[in-house]
Image (cartoon, rainbow, N blue to C red):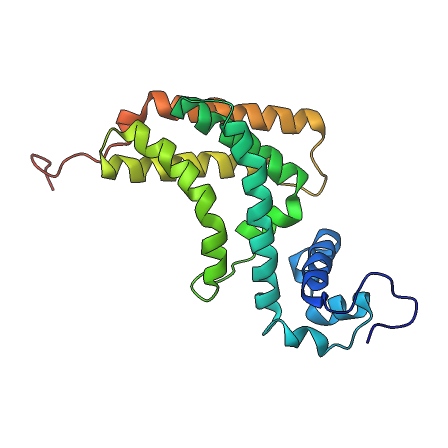
Length: 211
């Protein structure tokens, strides 16, 4: 039962309340400062209560990751849908990705820093799939049927967007609006540069290559 005076938790919605509270705690204390016990205390429920919904700490983090993928999908896909050309869509995606990282750092870290085992949590992969499909559709269109090139392009595009995001977040102080704008535009320009030079990403044929 919630403690007297607790107004955040409503009976029957403990799972959703735990996900929300976990996200708040991660925002305040980082991933290492989050625990099931602390989430329970903040909600005013017994420390054993979360185990009715989550097996352990990682299980709750996986639920937060699902929510994070819903948020990042909502942040990235609408900007992409303003364009029809694959190169423009990928540039818009890279720009929005960096902006999401800046404005939603705790969720970004849950997705890319927490080290969650996706094989143990297939719900994460399911939540990620719509975003991957939007991304991969652009990559395949630019690869002109070359599956190997599509793989190399996907790795390069993802590394570019994530690299700009991580460089922006590097340091203790939160980046200001100007820094975010610069990082987002750099990521978009770098993505366009990769599109223009994508033939260089192709893996050379083994035929005629000396070993």
